Amino acid sequence: MDPAGYLTFGLSFASLFTLPTYSYASALSGAATTQHVPVLLNETLDNLNIKPGGRYIDGTVGGGGHSEAILASAPDVELLGLDADPAAIERAAIRLRSFGARVKLVNANFSQLGEVACAQHFDQVDGLVLDLGLSSDQLGDADRGFGFITGGPLDMRFDPTRGSSAADLINTLDADELAELIYQYGEEPASRKIARAIVAARPIHSADQLAAVIEQAIGRRGRIHPATLTFQALRIAVNDELGALMSALPQATELLHSGGRMAIISFHSLEDRIVKEYFRAAAQEHVAQPDDPPGLVYRSATLRLITRKPIVASEAEVLSNPRARSAKLRIAEKI
Ligand SMILES: C[S@@+](CC[C@H](N)C(=O)[O-])C[C@H]1O[C@@H](n2cnc3c(N)ncnc32)[C@H](O)[C@@H]1O
Image (cartoon, rainbow, N blue to C red):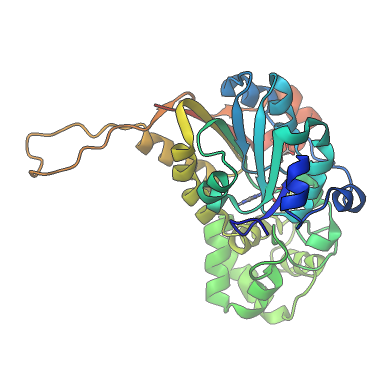
């Protein structure tokens, strides 16, 4: 363990001796290469204004697509990459190995962004990316339970060593709590019906078993699988995705130096709303009013909005990568 207590994979030689938790050899032998295609890649790079010798953080390194492009965009760029999923860190380490000591990879949740960045001496950076949600590698891995067609165990944790799995949740919550979770995080109109069917069918241990229970309860509606919103809701709850995002945004703002930019890519309205509202509030100046109470502390804006409306994928990108269909990219600059 490194001093901050995170699993760290430094690609520099020095880190191999100081951070024994991951070894370079085990990363090379253990992980498959990534299948993930990064979304809105050019749009992200164009807006980050990557500069030679600049320092960047990728808080969701995944398969390393955005990280690789940032590192390759200008000479001597350095990058700190985080991912909650240890398997993602291993895969990214393989992809990014040619950048050597310019990359540091840490297996950590971005809810601890500030602490991790300071421990790795990335406390004042030129740019930061969060590409939220899950990767195609995670979705396609039957053992992770993210996809309902794969039939794997119902896990859904980004970090399979921490917290409760989706199976723990659906086998222990009561019908009201389940319905609330499915409604809040999936915006699923049939949440009550689904929750009752789940409770009646328990115990449920596999992803395909859950998908079948939901399909039987509410039937098929069009081309999208009827379990889609429930799976989204469970994944968000299991990983506290919205809580992590809300805690990461102010930390990210703090880490940027003046003129540094953050690029956030979200995939559903719950995430996008959090980013939009945070950016809007951080870009607002509190202007003194005549009836303000004495002693009020006035807050000045910390961010400048670069995108008033989110950037979405082109038709060509959506055709070649259907994951890009719901992606929204928002950019803000530290004042
Ligand atoms: C869409 S993928 C990123 C793909 C990456 N940009 C690429 O080009 O390959 C999202 C990644 O974020 C990770 N992730 C999601 N929430 C996280 C969190 N709170 N902290 C750290 N990593 C997280 C997931 O494990 C996943 O690997």
